[in-house]
Length: 227
Image: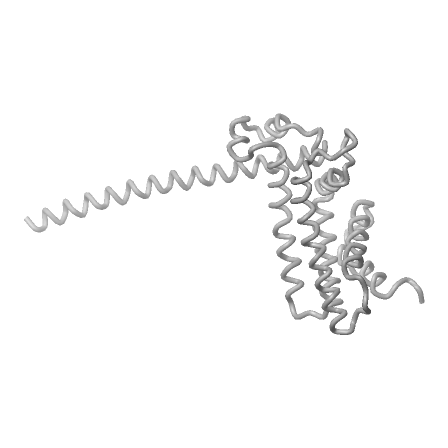
């Protein structure tokens, strides 16, 4: 009787565990499919926004390229602007984290800046088309002569720029404190260096050797061009 009861108990529990594992496996597959579909939409959005700009791009074009339905897109994103911001945020977050980590290292300030310039150059080179669209909108140069973003929307994009440029400013101040950089307006200097980086990328002057370009920019920035 004991053996029979134990066998019944064992079999019942094995069956239950099997059902749980099947449910878990199915839920996991659904979750993976959902993540893949979301990523597919974001990749399609990158292509469409980069080619057409924010104002002229349409959700329908993104849907067609992602080979999905309109309902699926709106399951993940409320509207075109949220889709665009999510794309910007998810592409820029790892870049911002790397800059922050460099700023916190024990490297000398000038070496930190050189390393950060390299990261800036690589990131903007990899994402040049999309970030050109973003900057175009933030400067109010859209096809209708004004930005497609509201003031509130512009602010959240601009804050991302301020945060990353602010990391340069922190390192410049660290250099002043250590006596390796002369007294200066660190905010203006950080924005000046950022402007050089962006123009080098958008004018296709970076080349294949990003590190060499970073060294050249920082050398001129630190020591000038005079002999």
